[in-house]
Image 1 (cartoon, helix red, strand yellow):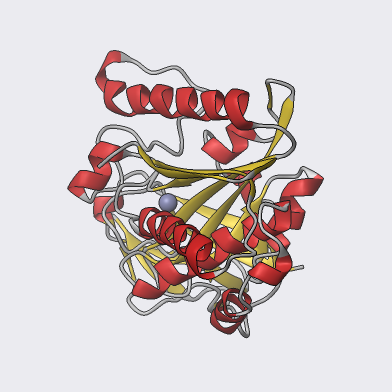
Image 2 (spheres, rainbow, N blue to C red):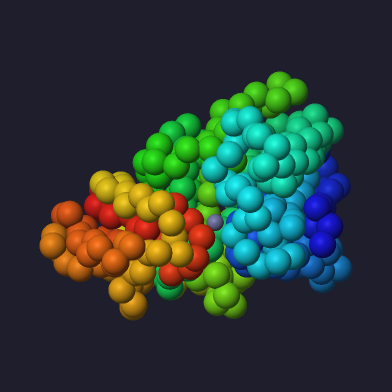
Length: 301
Ligand SMILES: [Zn+2]
C-alpha cells in the first residue's frame, strides 16, 4: 500500500482538501472511499466536458502497517498520540505520525492557495455509527453540517491526541487548517465506503473545489437516507473508559444512537457489570479487541 493513495490537481487554482483514511488499521472504508473518489474525478473529466476542478485533492493512508495487518494499531493508537512525544517501544506509530505530518505540511506549502480542509475518515465496530466530529472552529462545524448526519459537537474535547484536534486551526505556510472527522458506518459494511465517498464529494463541494451543478444529488441522498431518524446534533454526556478491551464485553446488539435508560445493563468489564449511569443514546459501543472507550452516551442538542 502506498502512503499517498492518490491526488487530483485541478485546472484552476483553489482550495486544498486533504483526506486521511485508515488512521485505525481495521478501518478500510476511508481508504477505499478515497480510491473511488479519485476514480470518479478522473472519469468526470472524460464524461463531463464542462467539469472544472479548482485546487487540489490528496488522499493519504493512515496507519499503513496496521492497515496491512487489519488491526486498529500495532503499538500505539495512531489517533491518540498527536502532539505527544514517543518512547522507543512505541516507535512504529510515532514514525508513521512523522511521515504523515511531513506529507500534510508539504502538501499545504505546495498547493494551498486559499482554504485548507483536513478530513479524517473512520468507521465504528457497531452498526449505524454515522456521524461527523467538528472542532470548535466555526468553519469546521459548517463542513460537518454539510454531511447530513448527526454532528457530535463536543467529541473533540473528550478525545486527546487526535490528528483532527492537533491540526485544528493550525497555520502552515500562511493557511489556516479546518479539520474534522467523519465516521461512515460499520467497519466492513460496503455502505461505509459509499458514505465515505459521499462525504468526500460533499466536502469538495463545500470548499468550492467542484461546482454544485457538477455534483450528483445521490451523494446527499445516501447520507440523508442512512442517517434518517437520527438526531442532527448531539453532545457527549458520558464516556466509559476501559483499561483492557480484551476483557471488555459489550452486550450484543447495540447500534449507534440507540436509546438507553439509566440502570440498563450494557456490558461486562473484567466480569463486572457496567450499567448506564443516565438516560441517553449510546454511541460507539465497542465490539472489537482494541480501544480505550467502551462506549459513549450522547444527548440531543
Ligand atoms: Zn477510527
